[in-house]
Length: 126
View (cartoon, rainbow, N blue to C red):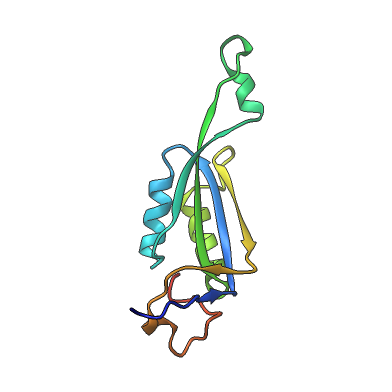
């Protein structure tokens, strides 16, 4: 049995992008085109001024898609910008994006990607 080892990823950030329903596929394709291995997408419901715009003032649920992706610190700006543009977040009401530095993260990283990069690096994933 192979020895199990935790690979700590310390120089990574989590990008979270909240967009209108149907935009996640476009953003995910832009991530794949950039070489990002994968992202997590889940559904949400937004609240705010738009919920009051329903018929006769009845609240209208606004469905959202939330995309999360881990990126190496040195790739953060490039991936962040790509997601912003793909999601058309420069258009009012399309959504928003933010990045959070992570203290610690872990996932499976093939040995050949770790060699020579150190445990803190994660550039091969993004």
